[in-house]
Image (cartoon, rainbow, N blue to C red):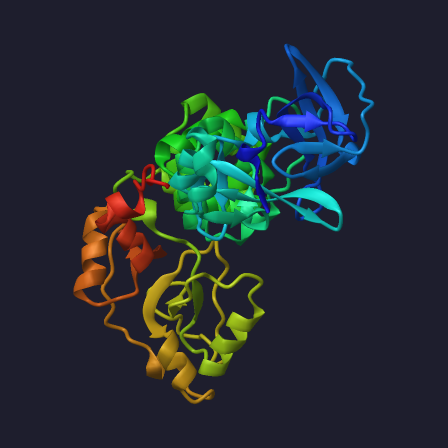
Length: 429
């Protein structure tokens, strides 16, 4: 294995050992291969830079040795798709996927694999910088290395001044919170580059976690159709908060491009104050009629195309405060989403699973449930959750109609704002 910095400015020798110049840079081409091959050398002869194909490279052994003494002295002209290790990698930031952090490249590691020299890793240790910038006589004695395998490194295409095709697929494996911290810590250009490469769902999960300032910048800077697609994948409350931070005209334009159903959910939440329970509530919860049984509720959950996350309880509801006198005795499923519903009680998921399937939900439900009003302060809703040891609290309007729920996650976002909402720029080493 060879450290790239030890080769810089060293002689490049022809087949018979004569010096044809000094090594200015090394070219790799990123693609589908895990370890990018060296495709060429940039050689300096006085003030002239010329290109030597990677196929002419015989070995790196303190100096670069070529298989031929004949070279083309035409001036080097950089092409799209080419990454220069000195100019585009050294001293630049990359993402350490395994370490879930941003790191600065202090040296690059090269090794022959199947008779081809390849980029195999980067050294991010402080010792690498000393080894690179100090006297060459020190290089063999400085061994403190912190190598990141290139397979676990995410190169940022914006680091290069030419057009590159870089895959960001591996970033989708990161937890959205970790990815959001990375997006916050990078420059706007680099952040936009990453978000543009993510699918809508991953982008939405990530942007729900970034700082308000970065979120607004990214949404305003991207195509409005793309922004609308991402907001549709967000929780309605998060989408409403995001739109409220945008310029009014831009927010209206993006909202108009959203699907009508998702847009209506967001507009409903925008009607509430930013610090109210109505703003942070979720309208995604499982509801069912009071004459249903446990097996009816389980069947309903299994039939859902998308199960609410988290699924904490089943909400027993009716379409009006008192049952109609001629109501039949059959099991009653949930009323349509757009119909007013009134809360009878809740069945916690644990009790639902442990109960006999034939048991009526009315017999296992808890009808003494604390509730909050949509205009209550979000902090008060969080306090109700904490005081009653709840995982979610229903939100009822003045007429007693159930509008949604505030979950414990929503409460944490209120009670721990500095950790949950304003993560800011994390210190990356």
